[in-house]
Image (tube, rainbow, N blue to C red):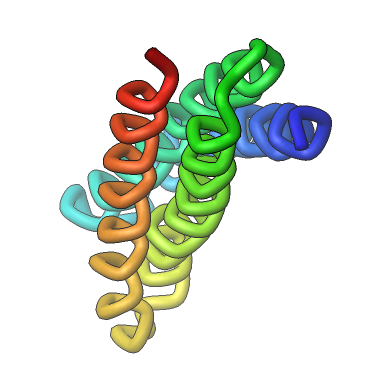
Length: 127
């Protein structure tokens, strides 16, 4: 599990930096400020959760009770899916203008919230 989590975290981090640079240099002046802001929000949340995944991966390497490890696994899955849905939908919405991507963003946000809740439960079960 940690190898997969570290791989996704590294990929998410790389993509966040690349898309952040793309937004700053390639989209500035080409998108209205509110759409550029939405794109940058996607980049920020992607980077936050890349870092969170790194921490989950490190935590999962520790000697943990089975229950705690199960909740860490849930957290990582929810962070991966939530980032893809939340940030991905913001990127798609801003770059294509297709409004159908808008309703996906809150679903991603719920996944991210559930990921943090899972992390909280993992912490409770660790001690």
